[in-house]
Image (tube, rainbow, N blue to C red; front, side, top):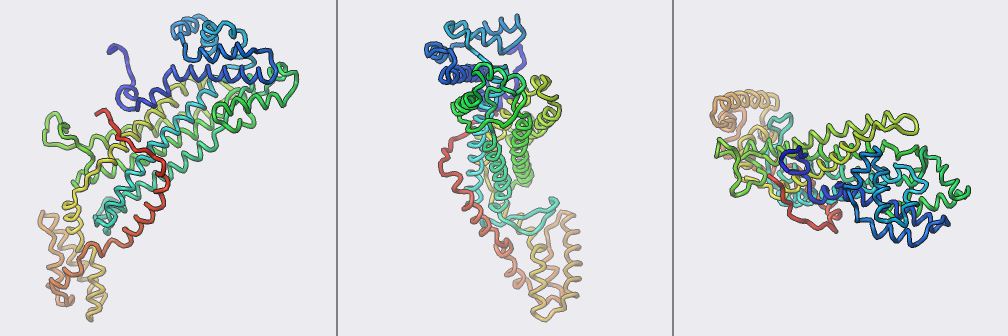
Length: 471
């Protein structure tokens, strides 16, 4: 067990549900269900296939002899034909009609479309769970003033909840993109070696309506209402590019949020979950590293890089098809889904247990508030008869002096400096009255309320579950 490479996506990061979905067992069972659907549609539309043959195929969908298939593939060097052979061994009455009129891409491509559709639906639930956590967090801290940053330099105050809505809005855009991809996914159907359906013209005696009906029935069996209008041997590889870009977008949003949390944890303002017996460092026992957010960022980088595979494949399909996509897709597509699943699981875990150190948040906001409030202070001094231009220069000079003092490790004394300036005509008490943090957060609470109200209907049917992660 330990003497062979195992992908960390399987052993450490992805969920059991996603690992099951992309398992060889699920893949081959899906192939067999496709062969059953093909045989059943062909039978119903008049081809010489019996109900007994279809029934035997249905009964043996889960009875897969993988050793037999592996031995046969080694002999014939063809995975699909190896599984046609293996299926026929357990369904001998139907062995002669399995895969009738089809090419390998009937099962490989339609199988992938089914798996990718189901995987996107799984990720959609994870994405909504993260969004629901963030919406609740934003609502809770809708009015808690915190220092805002531009260029990672102190800027005007925002609120902790308002900042969370920035992350939430990114995820809403990802949800919209994911839903677009799902809405526009179509079925390949059974189209033949170059997409011309020539084999079925022969099987159905030139009856094109029966060919169309066959594809409609097979597609409907697997939940697809449409087939691609035209194709070569495969479904358009542009779809893979669209899917991986969607997964990359989720990685981008998770990275942005996790990176922000890492920065804030450095300042001890916000912290990711940390378990009672968790060890932060093997050497420095006092450490509380943001390992979950670091892992989100690390895996998201992989996910964003993985998305480059699909456009390169889509751009070199060579007329009706080439096989240089196969080995790449076997890796890049499943691993893209496993990685996105892992990232969302971590994001769900983090957003479900974010801790806000409110006193540190308040202290940090208070430390910079005198600088942020200078425009208001200037206006108040003008109301009391001061000269705006003269006061502006006073504020500039005093601010630079106070900043220089802070760089020496001393506390900010900007208010004291301004109170001592005759031109200001404001004493210390006057200045303190103008320094209420809640007066400098603009419309943050209102913006949070409006946005949370907008996204809340998305969570109507969502069943939240605790997400356990491997640490």
